[in-house]
Amino acid sequence: MDSVLYEPREGYALITLNRPDKLNSFNEEMHSRLAEALDRLRDEGRRAVILTGAGRGFCAGQDLSDRNFPTGEVPDLGATLDRLYNPLVRKIRALELPVICAVNGVAAGAGANLALACDIVLAARSTKFIQAFAKIGLVPDSGGTWSLTRLLGEARAKALAMTAAPLPAEQAEAWGLIWRTMDDDALMDEAHALAAQFAAAPTRGLALIKQAIQAAATNDMDAQLDLERDLQREAGRTTDYREGVAAFLEKRAPKFTGR
Ligand code: T3D
Image (cartoon, rainbow, N blue to C red; front, side, top):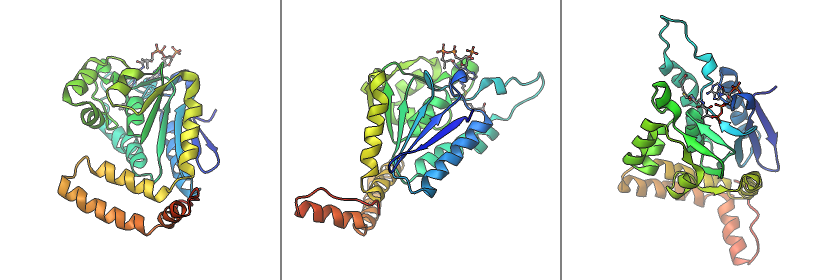
């Protein structure tokens, strides 16, 4: 069974983590397949992507059956982050298209933080986000300490990370951790509708928006004003900008090509 499924759709793609009997937890093979799938998006000129999980969960983080070390062996988990998890998060953040995460059930450990690294997070109402790391003596990774602190503030970030308390999707939405929660059976329809909308959108402009908002995390206002100037200059040179203005003036729907 392929551990990652890649389904091309009209203008976008659906990527499914596919190890449902292990709650789609990551082994090395799934990391490689996912990296390949993400590279394929760019090669095929896709304009959006949905990331979801097969079965009843989204992803339970690292496959712990690969972490049963013999007594005396001291693992270097920093090396796995360097080699696998960090490149994955960086790849998602650098993709020049909207990444929609359709969280279809429990998201734990690096699985929760993988979801939070995506651009737009939709979650089924039954989902729980769990910073499971503290239960096994680890530290939230895959950008979790960054995302939680920035999106929720220090008090909630510390409490979620230190207690590993499950955070229900509706609470995650109310706290601003994710975009929207919906009924479980509506999740994929909503995700596909959004991806189809993005696949007909000014893709270059959306990529520049992503870049600007991500940079705002570390820029001061002055630097951000300069960045907005530079990105707006670039956006103004796109074919889609001309098309958007022409369509507005001609009172018709725009036909964006993504360029
Ligand atoms: O190691 C490094 O390289 C560093 C990087 C670390 C990144 C990390 O993500 S560390 C954190 C790892 N993840 C966890 O600690 C979560 C472990 N899983 C759970 O706590 C629970 O499974 C859940 C809360 C996610 C869901 O609970 P529940 O009751 O809904 O399901 P379950 O019965 O526990 O799991 C269903 C099956 O999936 C079960 O298998 P079985 O008994 O039916 O054969 C369970 O063992 C398996 N499973 C779930 N999570 C993992 C897993 N198998 C391997 N690894 C998992 N992470």
